[in-house]
Image (tube, rainbow, N blue to C red; front, side, top):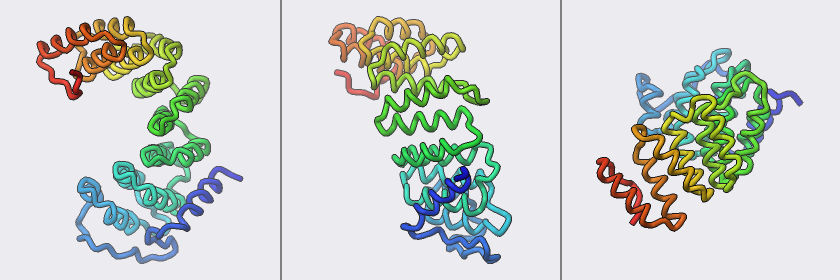
Length: 280
């Protein structure tokens, strides 16, 4: 079965059990919407009005003229924020029906991946990913994040290893990739993998990112490698934010180093930062 037919079959089957988005690809007349014609899709999404956003999205579709991909993207972001899986499946089916996924450069498919991950539909995310002809670093990040959000740290690490082994264009890990993978290492208590990721971060100059450095601190702390966590924290110095302090303080508490945690907490207060966690 071709990738296109497989995706269409999956989306169409899923949508049969749900009230369909009102759209007829063979009808020249779009469905009416209750909101004013001048109301923009962007504004509806900003307001969180998913029902009207879906209606406006389909109203803008016509035979041979599907909605722009960024319109799908805005609606899918709202679906993800609301964790509205049923509506997400409908949007996927609509994109297939209008041919919007034909020749996709990865943008729309990645938006769908992200949506499925946020909605806890990891199997759907995986099927979509496996059928993608164009994968970018954002696609890989979305799938890693989907597994991580579902509590499958081992699967997330497996996707990362496949990403490293892939020679495809766009398969080079970025800071967001490493931050997610380091979190997975911490959850899985896989300090060895965490150290390897740290080495890659240094090699690619990504260790200077506060996002990656904070993930390193948290990973080392969760793996019981507190000396390494403190070294990263001290190296970060001017790049420290509240998350940096929270990570190293929490690491001390997790490892029974209460006096060190108190010392760091006072240092955080002297730095003029307020913790969003209740440490003591």
